[in-house]
Length: 325
Length: 272
Image (cartoon, rainbow over all chains, first blue to last red; front, side, top):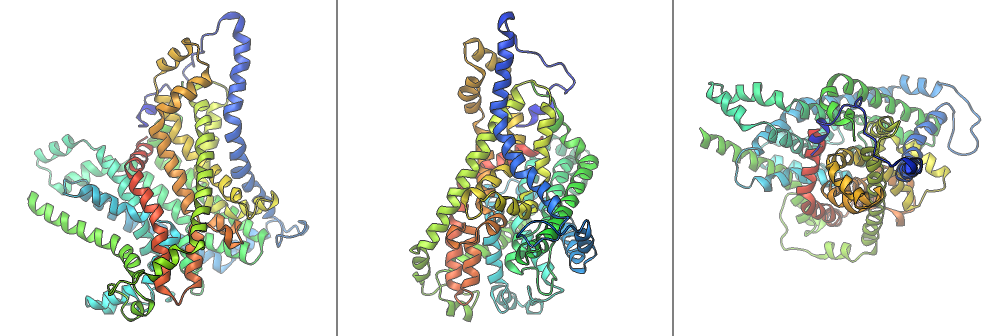
């Protein structure tokens, strides 16, 4: 449905003015301005008031040591930033976010591609299958967290099932073992979000013409070669969008961790957003918390800009930069 | 060859269904058991079925209040985001004026700045505005953060509607805003449904902002309620499962009803 955007006029092309009869021209221009103000002002006020201003406010608070009450008097410059960046817990939190991001790409991406290809075949009950795969994505993070918290209890559902099928040796203290907890969380994340990737890739696969595959097969390409050299390159744009969303999501990971482990045990699963909420909100270190928020924002922003610049540019050019009537 | 492929396909499909559905069944069926039964055999089936947990949750005012709060906030957030977003998308797609592309870029920047990152600063800002413990304190920021995706999806859609329709309407004496209201909006219905679903689901599931804004549990939304119920009833697993199962129903129902359109909308927004 956005394909129309790609074929539109480039932004440099002259924009035709609506024909206006001589005498009424000034009046109609005034009228157009009024209309524009009426149409744009509410959205702009909402956006600036609740998206832009909070960022500015946070940047300001981050320069103070402030418990959240009383006037801002204790100016500390960049100390909050230095403290955060040099702290062990924050550094390990950044590391945890990175591990989740890398694991997502290494594990979830191939899995999503495989599932999407599977679901793209003519299987009976394909529609049902698609709905099932997508269902966990619709559940809230809170519900997901509670479900898995209960299933992963020591001696709980997961342990019992593993023992019943003879894999008792795999039983772990899923959420209580410091070296295990992050990977357990990753499994839950995969369960919850895999459907989103599958749906995106399915959409991408539908854009791969069947003739191309048939032609490759006629030329003697094996199914694997066809996949590797015909289908995957054509899925490129979709894969790049998925990687973008997945990394941004990994960088902000919060709800599941907060409900399932609160970042524990012993900070072994703390993420940046958990660290930020814990300090800013639970311990009333609002200046410090704001500094962490700004750092998190900058990390996301820098990643997004670089990614847009180097990976997504070709893909989004049509949608974002094309001119409009 | 084809048949062998299909057999592996079906095997994989069964595995996928199992992994996805078993946790959901664990919750739904667990709600029909007693905590003692669950503790004795976590993976067992209900036998006999116990209805007390579900009855107790479904008749508690707490559950319905959470549901009502969530619905109110999601409806306000969706209405604001789609209403104001479609007006802005109309201006950005059907008018020529200086600064239009800059303005559009400003809105798209919002895509890079998700609500999760902004929650703490937003909390401080809302406190200053005196909007804590107020449903609007959650709904309005959610609407603001849904604006970028709304505009990014609606603008190309509105732009793709042929200019002849607009010319004809204007020739017939309609004002430009009349064209927007009577012709463009009805024609944009598929895209409007997509952005509404996205805004609604985002609001419905959102956890962090309501967690910060609401202290008084009578204001809690459903996700907060589920988490709270779990931590308050750690000894009563069966009841937690019943509560969780019932709280899944609205989202899953909504999903089944909107699935086609949601998937179609996502498809469209990525193909660009």
